[in-house]
View 1 (cartoon, rainbow, N blue to C red):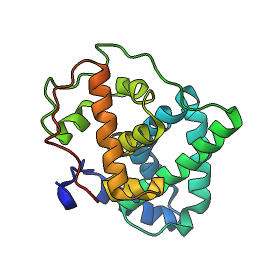
View 2: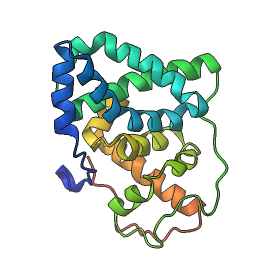
View 3: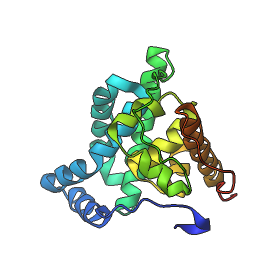
View 4: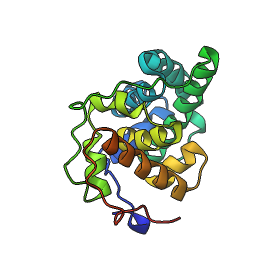
Length: 202
C-alpha cells in the first residue's frame, strides 16, 4: 500500500527504465529503444482508452515529441512514465479537438470484464481491469473516471503521479478511479462492493 493507504501497482522495470533513459539522454539510441519497449505498451493502452483506433497514430506523435524533448526530462523511471503519459495525453486531447469528438462509449458485454464477485479491496478491482479487452469498457466511463483508471491500471502510475498528469489533486484522482471501478461493476451486474472501502481523503 502506498502513502495514505493508497494501493500501488509496482512497476518492477522502473529501475531498468531509469537507467535506459539516462543513457538515452547521453545519446545512446539503443537505450532509447529499451525505454520505448518498456513504456509503449502501457502508453498505447492509455491512448486506446482515449482515442480508440487512432491510438497508434497519436502514440507516434507523442514519441516524436518525447524524443525531441528528452534532454529536458529530469527524473527516474517512474517519473519518465508520468512525463510520457502527460505528453501522450496532450497529443490525444489535441487529436480529439481536431476530430470534435469525445471518447466513444463502448458497448458493455457481460463477459468482457472479469470483476471478482465481491470487490473486497481496491487492489482486486485494479487487477481485474488490467486486461487488454477491458479498455473498451473503460472508455464508456465519464472522462475523469476513465483517465484515472487508465493511468493507474494501464500506465501503472501511482496516485500522485496520475494527479500530476491530469492536473488534479491526488484525492480527486483516487475518488475518480474508485467511482469508475464501482460504475463498471454496477454496469456488469457484479457489484458486490460495499462502501466500507472508499478512497482515502486527500
